[in-house]
Image (tube, rainbow, N blue to C red; front, side):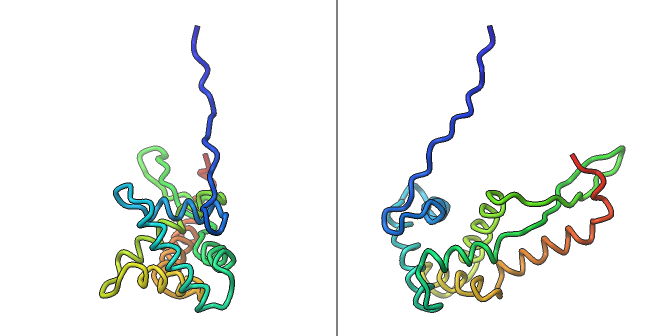
Length: 156
């Protein structure tokens, strides 16, 4: 008798201060070496600077940042015959959030000369204002998808 595979996902626990699951996921992505309290301190400090800068609540400002950074289209490699094509596909909401968070954190880590809280805050502010490295990465992804629109009939 074969065992049935269970589709069990642990429920997401919201962050303790703002009560947002998305901020909790963001903290977990920032976390380095299992040091969650350090990651929380960094993220909460950056969110305070972001909220101060855009004069909004930290949760609303963060939601707008993620919305601005999330791509709508991306390309996936598809092998047809002997050739590999870059096929544009729509990005689902959870995948868009994951990509946005990944790009924001990598752009923040790529900046230099300031403490990480300030670098993260600057990247969040830039993304909120639709400028900066994260937005550039999103636009590159959209351009790539647009350029390969001819291969969209190679869907899965």
